Image 1 (cartoon, rainbow, N blue to C red):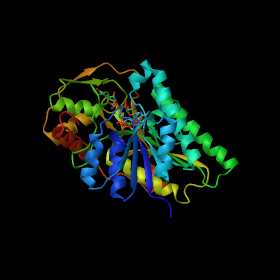
Image 2: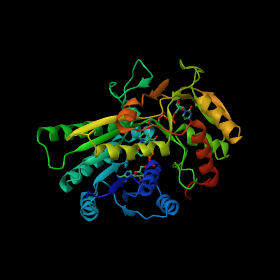
Image 3: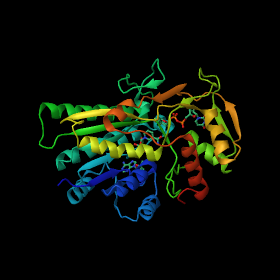
Length: 349
Ligand code: NAD
Ligand code: UFG
């Protein structure tokens, strides 16, 4: 029988820790490799506390080939979910080499080790940021790619590398063929319903939802709404926010698909993981206020450079091929964000 061991890079992070939880609950053996550069081990302690199950943790950098090879030899996973990466857009503009080294080189080392260990099933954390400008705000997987910053380009490069790997396999098949799912996330928010794990950004958050919740709890004074003159229904930017638990369930569905006829030998396929529904910044603020009873102090500020007016997923392919769809709505996302924030005002500290 095939091993039920899933190796998760970046498993101590925000999305990774939620994935560990769902996988443990679905009776997978979970092995995490994380260098803790943007996370705390406490997240995994809590995952084990919630599930009553144990996982195996290695503090290692995915660029350390010797360490990674040893872990693969010992743990013999059947599948890898690859979350490890740096993700701050602004930092990537300031330090592109750091981003390409960590994200692109890290993935090269990981896939070399996987190839040598003959573990060729991979689920990769990609992002809606790989898409280029388009005429329609609703993105399907065949839209042209065209990331506009080093972070986004690192994701696009990794997608290219993984596609090339699968093409090479088609031409010269292995006994254990490459099968790769590229999951393009829209805007993950929310937290596990226990309020024990959640997003714990370092310093001042870049993203809207953690910023709003830190204003609500009094850690930050005022939210800047970046632009109210976009061609959207109220002038503010529209995004597709998705509950992190729905998002990670998409990864379990992807693992099922990798083991089914959906993925033929040597295939590499991209799927949007979003709800298909966009909300504006002002709609987020209003819903946050009605769900939590808190007032959000905000001001309208100039547009943030690089932001699109509107971007949301067409999630039909994931429904059709992965049999995945979201279960939670915006109110659930906000209630769970607030539950995590109020129970952990200092994050994991
Ligand atoms: P996160 O920073 O919370 O988690 C990433 C984890 O990877 C961290 O625990 C970090 O310590 C680890 N890591 C980074 N570089 C590593 C390395 N070289 N070796 C080992 N571990 C390493 O981020 P997240 O929000 O959980 O995102 C997970 C993945 O999803 C990332 O690849 C990110 O680019 C992608 N993604 C995130 C979003 C989002 O909005 N959160 C959107 C689209 C895509
Ligand atoms: N926004 C504000 N004020 C803030 C922060 C954000 O008004 O303080 C607005 C933005 O202008 C945008 C919306 O809120 O209209 C969402 O912004 P986020 O920064 O939360 O998210 P983005 O859509 O800009 O980008 C995020 C990640 C990217 C990822 C992308 C798609 O930061 O890395 O989602 O997954 F690629």
